[in-house]
Image 1 (cartoon, rainbow, N blue to C red):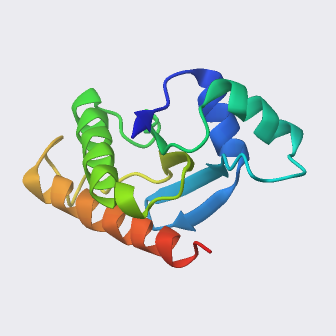
Image 2: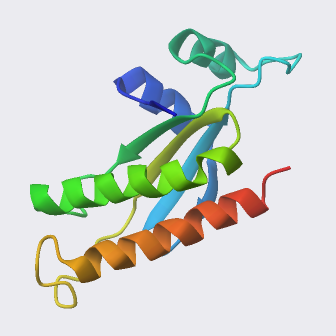
Amino acid sequence: MQRLKTRPQFQAALAGGSVARTAHFVLHRLMLDSAAGGEAPAVGAAHALMAPGQVWLGALVPKRWARRAVTRNAIRRQIYRIATDFEPQLAPAAHVVRLRAAFDRKVYVSASSDALKGAVRDELRALFERANRGRP
């Protein structure tokens, strides 16, 4: 699994549209299938940024929804860990997991608690399972 690193890579993957969502996360996917005949211009540009036939993953955890760096890094680590478990089931495409809502600080008082990490893991598993169900 390759990681998305540059802004153009993230922008191209986000342009692909969302394929699954949960209460706190959204999974965006841009298919990189080189066998597609009539490619859209965005897909052609994405081929220059990312090699087709591989799984690419990026994690987008904005400060708006996770104020503390410790929390953002813990969520990011959980995203990559769970995605590694689901890698054999993922399509060869560019995927971005985006945090879209904050976890309640009254419930998860600590910035990086085991309870928070467990909740994030459970929700990410549900997100990837939903994405795989909708896959052709």
